Structure formats: structure tokens, C-alpha cells
Length: 210
Image (cartoon, rainbow, N blue to C red; front, top):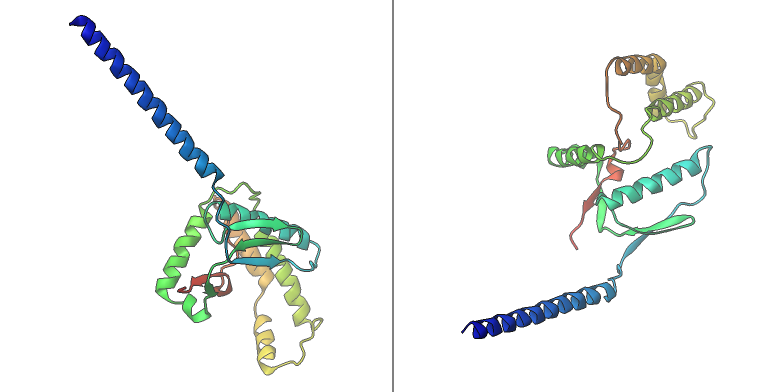
């Protein structure tokens, strides 16, 4: 009886080994099929052409924007990046339209935008986070504003609405306002995070039904 039990055990072990080999071969075959299966190509894409660049930091800004786009695409924020080439890139096409100014003021939409912005600002993006961009940007705006107010930049035609806006702008001391804001920020310990920096309705897509 012991011999019979040993034979049965040996037979069971062989069958189990065969099943294991068969299962392993099946997994390998399935994996091989998945690896060799052709990837589904997108049927619709968005072709973005950078065009001619102007300004001292235009090329640098374009490169930075492309890097940020790629990093966000990897984290499933915004359209997917399908490819890049000199002078542009290929993006996922999303059937959508930009928000209107009125829609951006709707509480339902505004709450969703704030939620997404919070997620973006919480990302750990491997980029320089020196807190100098906002101050440099404000300084450029102030310089441009001074040129407009002094009449160095002419608008054609000069409307009454623009004249009223220029009169209003001259009532503010923007240099003092910026200095005050900077002093407040310097007094606290505020973390420098990756930030969107351009929240406006034209940069928010509202998906459209297919």
C-alpha cells in the first residue's frame, strides 16, 4: 500500500508540474501577444505650431512650457502628449470649447476649477521654484504701464473708454502696491510651489458631447 501511495504521489506531482508548466507557458504566450500587439493610433490629434518667437526670453519660455506640458501629461493633467518635433508638438485632441467669462463666475464651475488648481499646485514637479517669476512679471507690467501712461505707446484709434482706463490707472501707485505685497510675503514663511499662473477662461476647456 505504501508503494501505491508513493506512486500516486509521484503521479500527482508530475501532473501538477505539467499544469504549472502549461500555465506558465500560457502566461508567457499571453504576455508575448500583448507585447507584440499593435498600439492603437489616435484618429484625431491637435497639431500645435509654435511659430516665430519674439523677445529676449521667448525661446526659453517656449522650452519651459513644453517641459511642463510633458510633465503634466505624464500625470494625467490636460491632453496627452503624442510627440514633439522642432517647432511644435502633437497633442491629444479633446472635443471641447473654452469657457466664457460668465461661465467662469458660476459657482459650480468655479469650485471644480479650484479643486483642479489645488491638485496642480500640490504636484511635486522637478523644476526650479525660486520665487522670482512673479516679481519679474509685475515689473514688466509696471514698465509697460508707465510707457502707456506717458504716451510712448499710442493706440489707434484712441477711444473714450481707453482714455478713462488710463485716467483710472494713474490713480494707483503700482510700485508702492508691489513693495507692500512683497513686504507682507517676506514676513511669513510661505512655501514656493509649482503654480499655474494663468487662470483665465480661455485656458479652461469644457468637454463637449461627441
